[in-house]
Image (cartoon, rainbow, N blue to C red; front, top):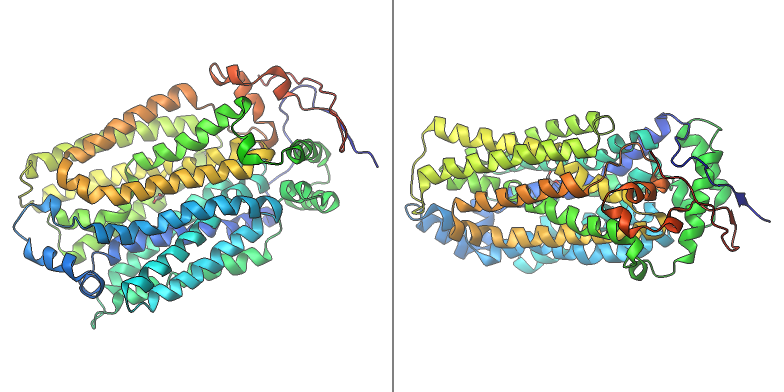
Length: 523
Ligand code: BGC
């Protein structure tokens, strides 16, 4: 049987379709994959600032913390072992995201999501029951593997299920769940810290099993995306799925584009080798630089260490955890700004505005902390002064939450052609995790050495990445995912890497040679 697919003659087209309840619900469940990531980000900072936890697993750090009340505040938490605990997870996530690529491509997106949730569940159980550092670290490695699988598959799933015009909104469900996970973890830490008897940290760590179970069970119920069904040879199922998720029978145009993409995809046997080809240079650059920049905003300094940071500037233990709850709430609420504007304003405007806002907030924070603590690191802050610090941290977090946070996941998940999509997303996750690891690892020593200058350091990166967005990140709102190549072709710089024949959406015979009918670029 020969399937003939005819190219769209006028370039990028809009497919019919609306947001159906079915697609909304599927995306909601899939997005809960973000909960496991967020829960962990939020829980580790709080747990590592709890006295009972430190006393049990890191007694040396605890002694130092007690001993150094009056000495340099910038350096009192500087412990390699403690940072190794926080950051070990991200190395595991990095490695597992590379394996997840094959599973996501060959078995479908849902099995990667399931594996992520299930492994996370086991890790959480081990952590809650930990009696020594070995159990703690092993548990964290499993949590990391889970996060690697989920972060690799969920953003792809969301971007493929969503109709082009609502892709930003639905994809940001992942980031929203990350922020909810962080917030819930902060609240749980605040409560469990108050448990008498010194086992509050167990509650914090064991409750990670809940989001793990949600995504594992949820994934079992999820349908796979039409793109993945076609890629794995289930054409009829894919058609039925498209009708269901688009709420219309008029799905032929979209189906045809997916088939073309899938045929091209089948010719690619080694996606990781192929992604190095010149024509993929724009996408590869983004897969590396976007997560790199996202982490160099310094967001995880606030997310992991805000209780430590607040303690450093003189808040009590409980007040520190409370302030982390406040920044966590700002993070969730500000994400909605992105959800409701990303498909209208577009990705670039949000990145540019958020970048400038974060830059300014970092500079103000550096000055506020510098004035009081100078380089000696000794100071007491008045209540009003401390409130100012918290307010600027919130302004900074809000800027991240509607720009680099969600778009750091959305943009990479929507720019790859199908044949390298899974590999590209793995690179994105791996770079993200590597940088998260590095920042978690070097933050405490950096705070000790750079002191308030640490905030200038991140502000410098904010400046560079905002310039990068202005010149090199194209607008991708509303462009159908399998027609993204046209966006690169049109770009003043990236267009040089894409030859005319690369933009052909060809007339293909299933399994046969391509004839190559060029398509006009999008205007
Ligand atoms: C980042 C995480 C970060 C979180 C904060 C995510 O987009 O990848 O590293 O902790 O946002 O909300």
